[in-house]
Length: 311
Image (tube, rainbow, N blue to C red):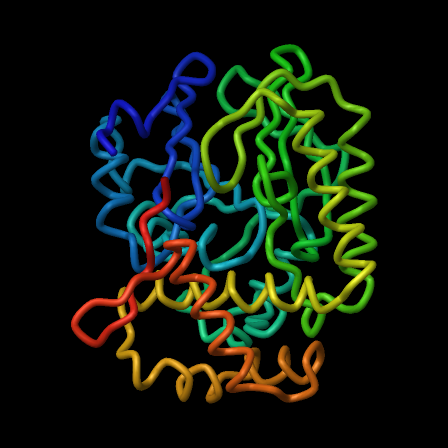
């Protein structure tokens, strides 16, 4: 995807950057104070640097970062940028606690064996706070479910929602009950129901393209949550496939004859199969990888599995 297709000016000097596959999108404000919202995977650091360079902003000139939650695809470059610039970082109060106490479990990093580095969080945000991006003022929305510390940003005058992982166009983000607890689906449902009260014309999600059918996306999200509540195995299948793809994205490629063994060495895969499928590890692995191959979310070449390319 060319840079001009990846980058869109949302408000004056405030830019949306769309990333490929399941890397997190992010935002850049250029001004007297240079601000980033989310920073992508640590493994995609070079591309993140190149995209910011395209906007005339190098890491050393960043003044502050807002992280919408603590998952590795949203905070991956935080430590490097903070080291180079000395910038301040803001998150929800819960995420601030996880990061500043070096809680690698609640951030999902150790559970999913994700690549990430701790950093310093200077400011804790809460529901109803405001966050200024140059002259643009956003309302902070606390929307847990996918993560305990999930935030979105709402600009009521322009009817813009920076939804992060609280709202996607056609799906919901992975639910991890072993970390987030058995209330996670109910929290996500409440968060989506709360969004229904907003007047939104354009949504800039944490993954995927911007979209305008806000009401339709909320209804699709609620329908998916209800289907999960009606059949937890569906939630389990979706979680397992999503994290398998995330694992490939982080590692670039994995030998076919090692992928199952590597998954069994993590905490998340055997626990998830135990929770949803009574320990049928090999069966669930084979069904999941076949479905991902069929949907082109994964492909095989020269004895390796590779992550597919998002449309």
